[in-house]
Length: 81
Image (cartoon, rainbow, N blue to C red; front, side):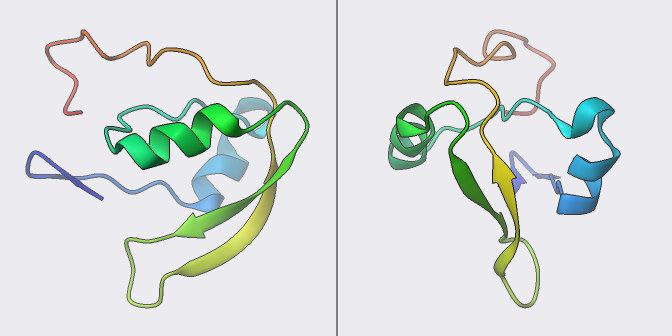
């Protein structure tokens, strides 16, 4: 994903390295993607998709551990999103 000239990548390996293997998903500005995130319900399974690579595709399964909430970084002036 390219965000204001900043190359942002987050792989399934990055997710596995997170405490409790969870993280927030911030910087989503595409309305359809936001709608998809809002539709996800607690404990549903979802695909983890790599899109910023030569061969994009599904690389794993994940479970939704928290339903949609406002992006906590939306008003941070230093945030690249």
